[in-house]
Image 1 (cartoon, rainbow, N blue to C red):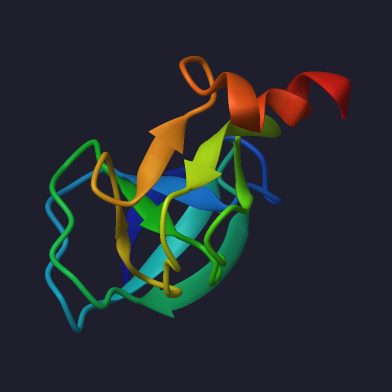
Image 2: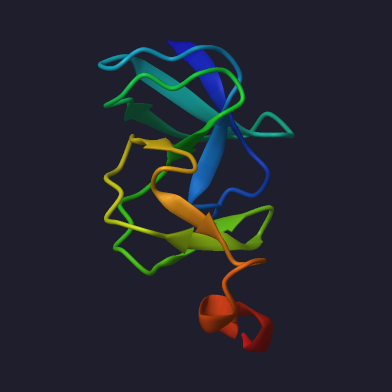
Length: 103
């Protein structure tokens, strides 16, 4: 089993691809400390350094990475999908979505 996704926190919604991942591959996700979190099937190609959805997220969901909200899902994002600028938007520039600052 390839170890190909790193998570900053085991509870993060997204992990980072540490190699190019191909749709259909089964990949193991680990924390930075090397603790296994899960195995998942990647459903889209994910380039090195891009994010992978560690769970399904509905549009509007505040996406967690580093144990904190980094943005919101601009559309529904399925488990195992490529997460990037096409389906996640930064909270930094979205004042109407900035409720994260109040959480």
